[in-house]
Length: 373
Ligand SMILES: Nc1nc2c(ncn2[C@@H]2O[C@H](COP(=O)(O)OP(=O)(O)O)[C@@H](O)[C@H]2O)c(=O)[nH]1
Ligand SMILES: [Mg+2]
Image (cartoon, rainbow, N blue to C red; front, side, top):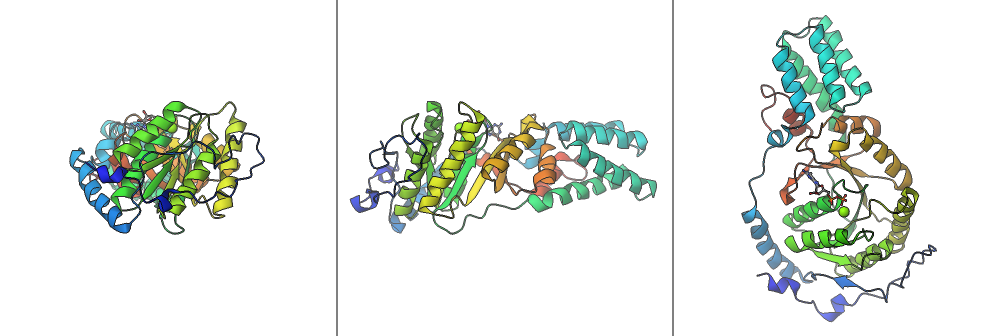
């Protein structure tokens, strides 16, 4: 099945145009790009008709094998935030000072951050003092409103538009879920009928290249890779050339999360940026920082570092299913105000969700208010 997918397109489409040398001064550039071993695992069909055929097949294939998408509420039920709040409302059916004190502790424990938790509870305390809330349910409604208002400004979805190819550079420390997020994103974009190419820019670990190739195979998306230890900027540069010559819609580039030193990693990312700019001064069009929702306040310091070193235009918070506390999303919104593009609610292809502030807040709050999931 899908044999035609792997067919080599006509030679004029495959032959990369002579690359403008990335001419990066860094001594790390190994081979000139023309000679670098170049592997394009599965080549995308080049004609619109062929692409349309593939889309028909792909639209059926992954969907039919997938488990039904679970609701935000189901996915967030295990989070420290949801469990903490649920317990609180059971223990304190009556609205009093002890309730508000415990709510503050609950928010802090869920990684919302001390400043945000204090602001939220001080406001509720004041309004409770003015008898604004008839009961706990009324207070819960006010809490929901407050939480939503904090997230609404960052719920700005990624708009994949022109220029084409739209280049997404995915960054973040090791293990946060970069490669998995790229796989899921490729799946999503393919489902939307876009042509996608992946660049295996994490050349530090051999397993990272294989992992990306495996996502590529599952979603019928080509992966540009060189051997492990290759120069990451070269791989991504090659990939951009390929994406351009094939007129693909989107290029998503994976990067390393750890090199020998932290400074080395930031230098490498800066180099990738410089090299991409040689082909397209506006690229990358999105620098997506992936953060692990289970790492709590540590995610804030990662965001500070990446933002300062290479600039970040959007966030993905992963692993919000399971035991993540969830509150980190509020802390990130408060400190950075960066668009939260997607959240990871599981390990499967369909578990990358466009961030929906209302679904998220309702998934954290007890049933009687939310429930829409
Ligand atoms: N439960 C859960 N696991 C995730 C999620 N995103 C990634 N993972 C897992 O996190 C681990 C590290 O992911 P990986 O993509 O290799 O991280 P990378 O080093 O940043 O590329 C893998 O086992 C993934 O399956 C998520 O949203 N939920
Ligand atoms: Mg990876």
